[in-house]
Length: 330
Ligand code: RAM
Image 1: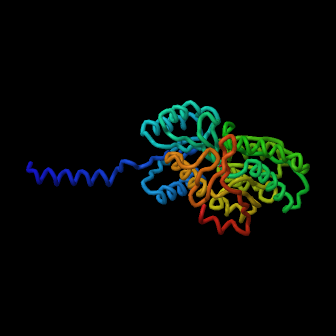
Image 2: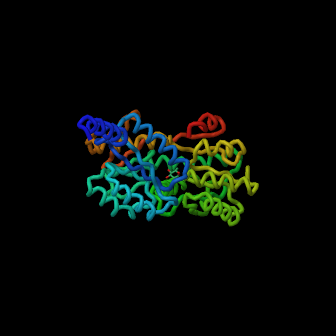
Image 3: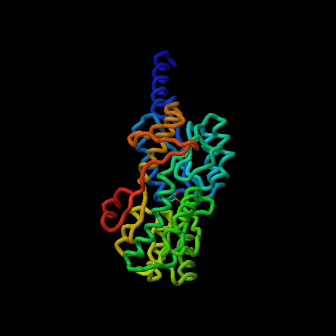
């Protein structure tokens, strides 16, 4: 090979390398409870937006196929092997992920939880979508509002949650129970778990309707659960008799609001949540921020409490007046 040819070949090789990898690219693993959940897909949209805005950041969107801690441990191990710079996880279990996340941190990987937290030992900080107290209170108030709008004085209500080990839902249920005594017209008869799987949530709803014939409302603080419950109620001819509420996506629930199966529901912006988690992860890698404050890009700064927790924003209520406006967004 002539000297000229060697130079040309080297130049081509270098050009190819720089177009595929760049030495200082920051890799962030965004780990979700499970793949195929609309809420997390919307969060990924925000995460990709943040990566684009930052430049030279790659977000690896990943998660198990069903909502288990075991599945997340496998996914996190793979991210450690890939030598990512940060991991941002929405956890299926508060404690089970701690050992693997500790290992990640020992290897210099910055770890945060977002949406659904892990114990403090497993992460640097946790980003709540909103105040947990507010979310709990809002879910109960939404059920009371649905009954009121239908002129139902009082009645039995049930909670359809995600998995029994889900940090976020468990905290919200606790908060709901704290305010329930203020709603003497709501009688909580059961809490059941659909595991954030559409078919299990659907079956659990059928069982609730059968076991509690006087049920007036189902509160599902999960986007998967609320959608399945609304569908099951509709299929069982319960529109106008049993109201489904909780936390859901306008894009998934607009039809059920139209049909009357859902009077109103709440959610924060899931795109913003994924964006914020990515911005925080990046800032931790870069050493930006402090123990009390860290940047979330266009969303401003997150204020951390003594437990290393922050809240992104307020949840928003959706009903017939606004659900279609937001259905195109998330
Ligand atoms: C589901 C998940 C998620 C939760 C939302 C409201 O998508 O359980 O963790 O925040 O519902």
